[in-house]
Image (cartoon, rainbow, N blue to C red):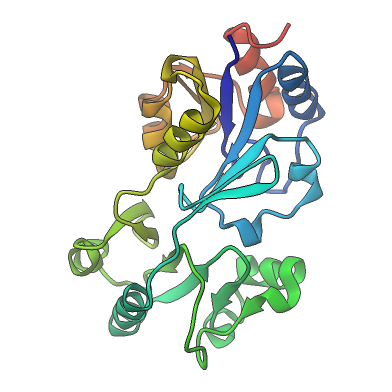
Length: 260
């Protein structure tokens, strides 16, 4: 019986220095060589999943942008883009609360450069994506799945109250949120993949470390939190493996007998 294993990227496959342990690459390749499926499952938009350090490991598909973009065997099988009305609503709230936002889509990232002059994350995006990082100002049409926002002192609860009819808000900390279309999570993306593959839920596994992994960790048959993960992720998981750099992926897969 084939198993399907879903891997978060940041804090799970690589650390804050974008280092992927060799044991992680070897373990995932062994997992697939034994006939199982391996999928990326990230909050990152597809436009921001390009590194060969990650893609070069080898995956059967990608669940990106919290379940709003799904690929299998290199082909797109699901895409949930915000409607023009939804994008307009988000931009209104961003402006009203003076937040600094990054709009994330399958092809482009949108951010106002003057809001992020010293921000290392935006500088990284500009280095990695080049012209595929575009200004929000001056755009009239967007292809976006979700956004991330720095609160600049605004209340997460107040912003959430404005957005709750059409969006879900994921709070990473009091100063950083993700906003996704209502009803979309990593877990809903996994459910769609399982329908495509014909894999039963009890034969699914997921590795994660953060608050945007909670639904995923509780949905799959076996949720595995990284040893370096947030306490909420560890509480949601069935099993807590070791840290990334201490062979966390390899040890987690071995714990469940998915590799030798």
